[in-house]
View 1 (cartoon, helix red, strand yellow):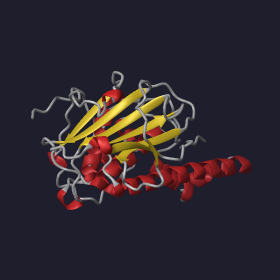
View 2 (cartoon, one colour; view 1 turned 180 degrees about the vertical axis):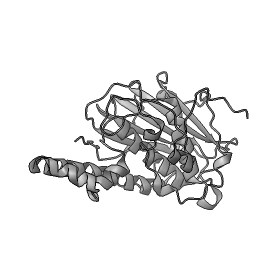
View 3 (cartoon, one colour; view 1 turned 135 degrees about the vertical axis):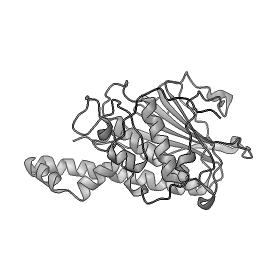
Length: 306
């Protein structure tokens, strides 16, 4: 496999270089600046994955990005997609764990909610800011009227609680069944969203943690690919919108929180981004995907703004 030149000039910040993550100068939204483009050092703050840094990274140098268009066909002919606005195919040189697939999903959900301005800060920073206020945060809260501060804090706590509930139940869902695809739907409804984002995991062959690549290394390469695709800079600033999570699972997986949607069809409009993950070697498909159906989270994430 030949590597495809990225064709862009990259600048490493000290924190990114230390973490092994590379980012480019793109128009990523930053706290306190909704329109101004971000520098590479600022982009480092967008994805807060510090809790992954303790993971082993022995496979990091082996991972390659495949920046070609995906040739995968839809699982069902009736789910033909509209032309892709943005495709981000990423190839790993070996298997990943089922737990890793779950973490890819959870981190992508957090990232999209922040980039599409449904959260005022990245999830980890927002949780830290409101639950363990720093001296700077406490000083900012003191400057706001008491009533405003209480309302803002209450809305944030609700948004965090809803998001944490979905993340927790996603972990349970991935523990019950293989999950070939995930949809993140913003605005409108599940049948006709304003925007939708897809994570395609169907080409991966999940293994146990001991046999798998480092999840931390895979996450860094995954988000580097998303940064390079620059999928969010051309989108207009949206209002607060409800966010719905859909995931495919086996019809007999015994899931009792996510609601089965037997006749659900992927929307034909509103597509913004598809991230397709696969292994570096051809996978032998032994799974009958026709036995997999869509499940919908019963919670609509409302988002939060200060």
